[in-house]
Length: 336
Image 1 (tube, rainbow, N blue to C red):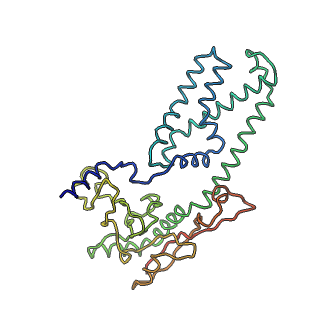
Image 2: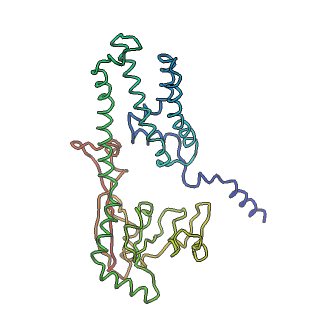
Image 3: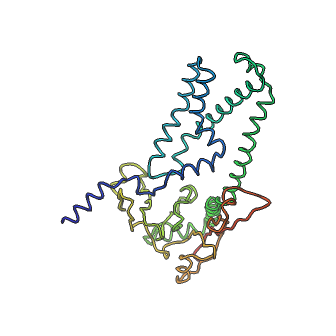
């Protein structure tokens, strides 16, 4: 009995934030630099920089200083809050993205003001009016052109390497609609025999399923057992997210992210399987398909970046004339 009590105490003392993975502070630093490059650096340091420069150059403009703090201080608070948490996700940074851009813009504006004073040797009262346009242009282009080029390259590499799930599920939806007549008959046959809707199954790629809108109403997503050992989502009931669902919900839930085996189906129950093949083109599910009575055929495949075998620079940026990327196959199989 004592052992059970200790287990209960341990469960109570678990920091729920750590159940879903732990990262150090460099995780957020890398994400900010990858997504915002130079703007991230300027945005983060903008608040202390602007406070110092306003105290030195515009000490009598207290209202302007107060407005700057009012606008950018929430970003500093948010950074302190999320950076200190052990569980980190990129989406936790989204709320400060507008403030990063604002901070970088204010930083650049202040640098232009300082440089204008330095080069024009005008008084503080009229240096803005007489500031040479060339200084503003050089500073603006010096920041914005590299930022734009790096951002475009970053967007292209993400589109090139990681859109395979969206492309494949879109392909699946179109395929199911095209084959709707025969598949609806199969679905009705299954339902008449006391079965369920045809299942589109995936294993370790469950978290890349975009949304239920990518499946027709008479198909369901299902999960195959994979190396993931946490708690998987469960199907909605006919009541959706209403409280009535609790009365008929059959699956188990826990708040410790422990695996619930009632989420899994066997591959014999699947009509389609979606899998990311290894760099050698193999998969544990391919072996299960070979052992099945039914025959499995490939319907579609799309390239998905092989992060392990692609150099870091080519994972980060798209370099068109020096591209050295390796890909795996994001593949859709159908049982016939």
